[in-house]
Amino acid sequence: MENIRWNTDLEIGIDVIDAQHKRLVDYINDLNKAISHGHTETVYQVMEQLRDYTMDHFAFEEELLEQAGYPLTDSHKQVHRRFEAKVEIMVSELGNGTDPMGVARRARNTMMVWLIQHIRHEDQDYAPFVKKILNKNESWVNAALKRVFGTTRA
Image (tube, rainbow, N blue to C red; front, side, top):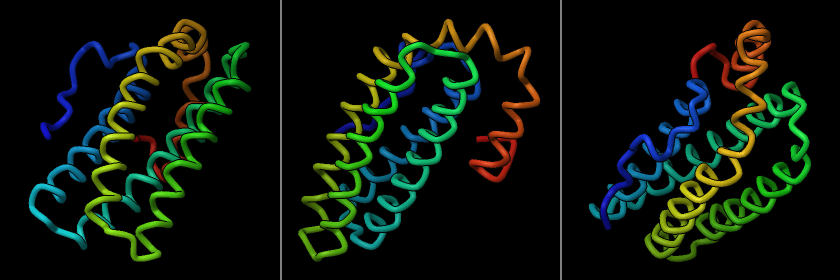
């Protein structure tokens, strides 16, 4: 399977979120590479990294939506919780000894489709709300990045 290629169709016009989405794409591509080379240990590592980064991204994004007063924040959070549950199941399967390459292929496919659809639909919907508050709350954004990711860069 080919890697996801980042392009402008996946950008929502919010640099900090676009950078996080690009990182998620990189992790999915890392998983794809581990699968294609049959590197089981790398599959485990990338799945853990992908899960952790996804959770951090969701936490940051949700704080941003709250700050922006986005009216669909609660439903957006529910979408995130359902996806987190899927990811946790796959990571648990890996821990339980389920065929790592099979789980990795399913994870890659699920995450690839979900991320692209999520960016193009749900994330695009909140972009105008967030753009209005970003410049006013730049210090909040940096503080949230530091709190969630440990750095002002995602």
